[in-house]
Image (cartoon, rainbow, N blue to C red; front, top):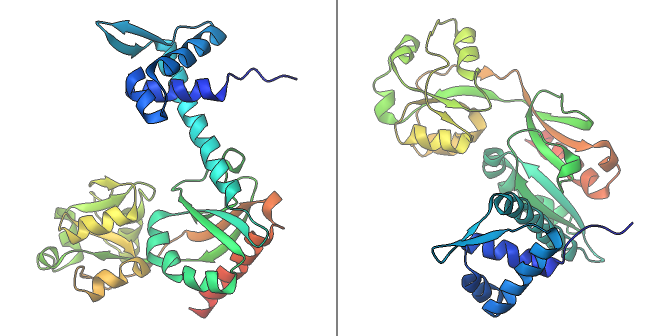
Length: 294
């Protein structure tokens, strides 16, 4: 069945014009004449039988359907471009592993060790992207992912990697203000978006009631929380292995040596269809051996 898809050149001309709101600027980016870009957009409008642009006071603006279409076309063109780049990385000697990682886990733990993986498996080309929450593998060009939480990712194989211990950390100036756990009730607690109950769990484990355990500024990434703590914005509750460098450098201090084991763990997750993929197997075996070696 013939697909109802406009010409790629028309879509690229439209996407570029929509970003610049100018046929002239689009022409400059695409190394075309202004007239050629305008004609490509006109061909697309005829194909769709929808007006995508209009001119108001000599300014080019998108119509309402044009805005909706531009958003979707831009996303699809980016996906096609990414898929093209990924296919171009294949060669007869290498297999490709597209791995989604937690940003701070990647920076603090995984990436410093990847030279070992490259040495052990020079035939595997590893591409990294970041994801904070579970996603649908069927809609992403991702083979596997590092996940923190419960082993409840639907339709995936989940291999437990490790647990973690969390402890409070803060700047030296903030540390000097704290003499007991109860002092934290009057100090800003830095929160992590995907771990909203972390402080509440920590206070319960140390046997202290803190009505403000859920209050405080929230950050999407643990790396942001670390930097906020270093800057003296408040006290952070961090996985111990992620702040070892900052503690050794004196950038962060530990007001109380109360490390509490997190109820959740880190997992390697991948769809069942990738369970026999050589690159996934090699990475799984490598990361498990790396964790076992300490």
